[in-house]
Image (cartoon, rainbow, N blue to C red; front, side, top):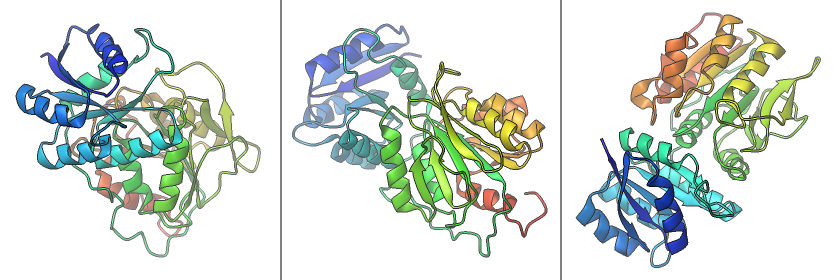
Length: 344
């Protein structure tokens, strides 16, 4: 099936670059282009596209305002196209919370490789569940009472749909949550803004991981996007390690690299969680964690934006139990509570 795409961007150059990139894929058809949301609104009515690429900053109505209208009146898959500035990152994160499928960064230079990966995201978006989300995605369920961390390390991997998923999970954590390390696939410079956003929304302290940061209860670290692989290690006191290296499974940072480092550092004294996302990153690492004796959880299909990474991990045997997004935090806290000895 051909995926019909509408490109919305106030820059003719960007529209041309996006169109040139997508036209290389025979399964994608560019049905229209629009320079602002007002033109886009009419184009949506006339062309009924399967997927929209939407610029974050545009005249007449910004991308967030337009996205809110789309998700309220005519929900459909939207991929946000953003600058790598701090402001661009913060607005894009808001868009992802509102229901945008994914984001892609505007390139600093042109060329046909400027938007590598966009075609795969567009095709995945066309198949994804579109669920409008409010600006307040923080979960309302109470955290587990009388929580006492048992010392296990929690490692989480996520990708497409991970912004909403991580907010939902972490917002239910108490201030003394398990020591947590997370690899979420995001463009460079976005993860710092995301960590700051999570820190405002959640009881634990959330920060972008830095070299040597202590891995202790009450601390949550997000791997820096595009810079290095996040690992944990150390003799006695565990710390974050940022290691340069090639992409793994097409990603840097890679979920597999994080999970494998947890196995080496603490073995079965850990919990592995894989959330919504495209591809297979994290599947083999989660299996290694389970084989080492760790408890492992995977987000179930019905609550995933994209049931890709969790599906591969489950089929590979890495997932001990599948859990819905809303029940993921209670499941993690139950497993890591020193007062609970039985498994979920």
